[in-house]
Amino acid sequence: LSSGQRLHNLYVLMKQKIKQFNIFESKIPSTDEHDIRNTILSTRLFIVTLTVAVIVLVFYTSLIDQTRIVIIKSPTFEQYATLYEKSSETLTCSCTQISIPYDKFIHLSPIYHQVCSSQFITDKWFKYINDSRPGGLIYTNDFRWLGLFQFQILENFCQLSSKTIDDELLIFYSQTTHLSQTATIASNITFQLQSQALIEQFQSTTKNNFLRLLQLIQDITQANKLISGLNTNYAIWAYNYTDFLFTTFVTQEYNMPANCICQVTYKCFQLSSITSFRDYLPGFLNGCFLLSSLLQSTLECWYNQTCFKQLIYEMNVSTTTTTTNFTILDPSRNNQYKPNTTIITIVN
Image 1: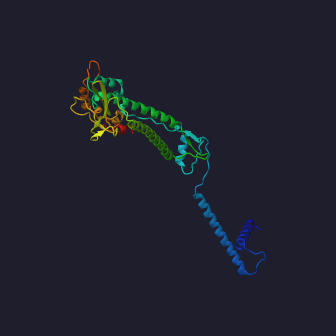
Image 2: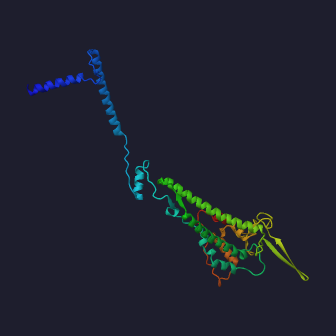
């Protein structure tokens, strides 16, 4: 046979085999043509169904994302940030340390009120007030008598605030985060929120501790009925009667609130003034105790050039012995606080 004839015979044979292909043929060949035809049709249907299923499976597999695990040891922060941006949902990064000091990722820089860096808590201002004191009687609402001690208290407030915050920061920085062995890096937003919560907790704790101590000092002073050496809560009157000297203590009375007496409460105040001053010193108070009256005072006159110049004029200090070159507080600084903000609000 020629090669063409052989190929034709092979084609006919293959065609016949395909037509007769039957995977459901029984072990005992059937002679029933109807049964044979049914099993052949079933075979063809099975093959078509299987082919379609394989095609669908291959197509579906090509569409879905395949997760590939890539391990990067000790990545830099820049590498981590890039990976997080690309694969935030699947990225996991275990912590190499389970205890991290706060000072490794938090740094706080306290900003103090401008009065704490001004001339008004320096010896220059203290000397100026001291040189303005007149002779004769002491007036419990005269700024020239009491202002020196109040500004010295203000200086101590600035120093105590700085010392308290520095001490609390040392404690805060020494504290550490405590993570589990399987802890992973938090997202940037979560980290920022957690850090902000730590900072707010530190601020609240430091402030509350300071205010509790301040309140305790005032309460103890009032409860023990301590007498001020400046006669601000009790006035001492001495009477010379023949051969006897009688001494009596008279409680001081102030007009804020009306008819307020120091024997009952230390929260009695009145506006400070200078005896020859036409008006009271705006916002600056005297009272039963210098500390409590200072806390309720404002520094608005020290923000106002006109008011401060009038105060300097009324203090009437000789310029030959004392300089009057003082710079008032800048109202554009410390925008959080207005000039009429009380000192206790600033302390808070």
